[in-house]
Length: 259
Image 1 (cartoon, rainbow, N blue to C red):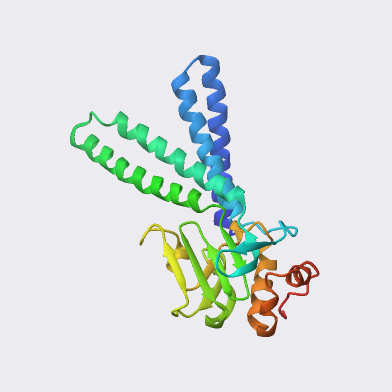
Image 2: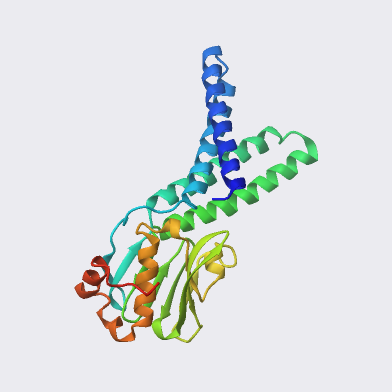
């Protein structure tokens, strides 16, 4: 976390606390309108800070262990699930932001041309955000599944499958925040489905690469990185994915690449 980021989060946290104090004062004086505005503002700021810090903090502990799952057309695989916590934080921020924008648009609806423009802008924003939230929740929870055939990934707004033979590098990089990138070529066996077309997340725009932000993973992202890189570099062991042998190897810490 940079000094600027830390300062920004500290400022927003103090502002949220000030809004809470203002809401308490408004309750005592009977100003219900101010109570609602300040409480909603504090709620949004608190969730923005929580999501921002969560996306950058260093993960401690092993997290949720992987699990064996059945795949529709590829037998079984080792599944690394997404965490529910960032889903909640992101949805809460988006929904509350749309509601606040809607209240502003309604309040300005009688202000002539400016009011009409605000209402139209809000309608477009509400449709876009609503589409994103519904798509994200319909695909939730996301997952990264390693099978003998390849890598299955369900992100926030898309799904993809990449065969192992198309993968040429596994790397840990940074695009604003850390990101796990499995670099792969596009082939006839690659399968991708975008549920929002050109709209979506950065990860969807990196396809055919498989890209996962560490803060979405319920398992320690370092473990996930090592497992993906290990099986990419050990072609002879890929058939064991989807079996208890792979689960035991991961649990015992033997699915690691040299530092």
